[in-house]
Figure 1 (cartoon, rainbow, N blue to C red):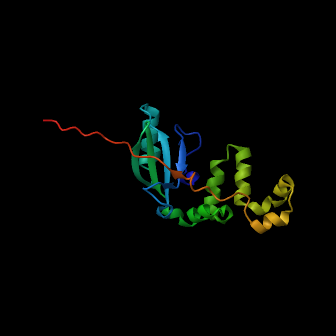
Figure 2: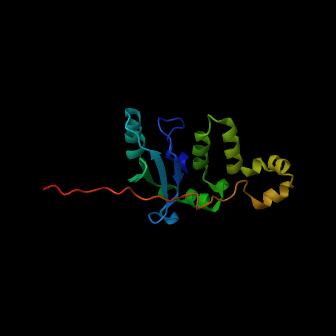
Figure 3: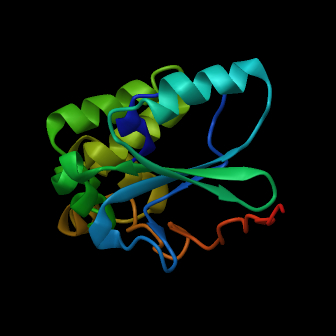
Amino acid sequence: MYPLLEIKRGSEATPLESYVSWDGKFGLQDQKLICVYNLREDEEFKRFEKTNLLSHMYFDSYYELENNKGAYIFNMKEYEHDFDCFLRGKYSEFISTTKEKVIGFFKSKPASKEIVMSYLYPERFYDNYANLLAVKASVLKEVGQLCSKPDIDKETLHATVKEVEIFNFI
């Protein structure tokens, strides 16, 4: 789902992880993408944060986490169909513009791009995978997808918001 933000690969900062739910805060039905970054004080990160995260058209909210990390939350309701397909492991059912964005994200990494292409367009790769897995192509065609459904536990952020100390000054 991260490529749908259209933040260029190789930018000044990359998320440590991205998630589609947050334990006790956002469920799958909320259609959020949660990107966790190391918080940095340098100008390069500040500029990246301002131009790519906080001003992003899908930006929803921000939470500071412990261990100097930040969770940037993006509302992905515009991609409702694709979000649902992702959760069901039906990557080949993404709409064509979504497929193009995902493939474009991996264009500078040919090996990764080829693997991603096989998930988005499995019909082109059934014979290749059948040879690799030593199974009949008809078995793969019956399944329809060449990548398993996401592990929702791994797609769920298990973190707490950093406690902010408040002092009373007299």
